[in-house]
Length: 314
Image (cartoon, rainbow, N blue to C red):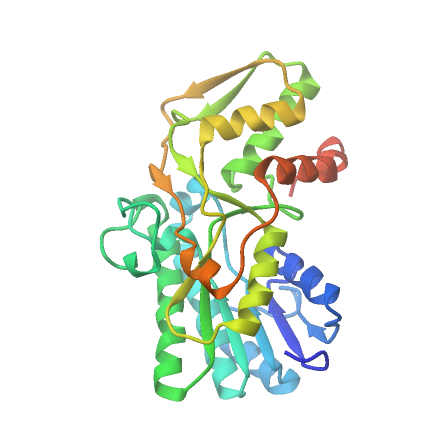
């Protein structure tokens, strides 16, 4: 990428998209284009085609998606598969038609089978059944990977796919109905502290293990791969280290300064027992994460205290 290249960040207002813009700006890339959803419905093929025809971006980061945690994925199954398929189909095809130099498609670690061996290697894709609670979302993301590979094979399009692990950071979602586990716990512990509660109730046993990556590290990895990776298939982006959810809860409890107890609602599902990325491929290409989990949580908590206290969680 050159400084004068026009770069389209789809999903610029989300946690990932905003981190990508911060990373691009840091290296002097300022010819960045984006549209609010009110201005451009990415599910509308004609609208997307007209946008690409008019703007002619050189590079595309496809970070736009309908996302959520276990509850949202399992409740809005039709929306998760329809919206995500439409968004990625329209952008990937328009990028091909309009001669985009390179496109990066961002997926999710939920593409891997529920009981896949750990850590998750890229070639475990489509080797077994998916976790049922987020299957519609996962299928959409798998379709995006295969679409990028198909356009590369048939048309020579330089479209690449990356699969981030669980993310957290600035502009995260703290709505308890749709959020992921880390921001949900952060909100719960903060509110419990502010309200003087004696306990925080967490879903399930707390035994499942998860990997967490600060979104600024993800953006740095995406920038690196956009400049250094040009192959089919996918690349995992993560830390290569995981933690039990109960240990995550204890870490957040310490960062927040909550002095009560942690209890468990065993009627709620645990989800996939473990999801740890094998990041050896990424490390061989030349990138490794730099923000530790505790440091990352601490910085996020400092950033969002004002948001919490103003009751603005959306």
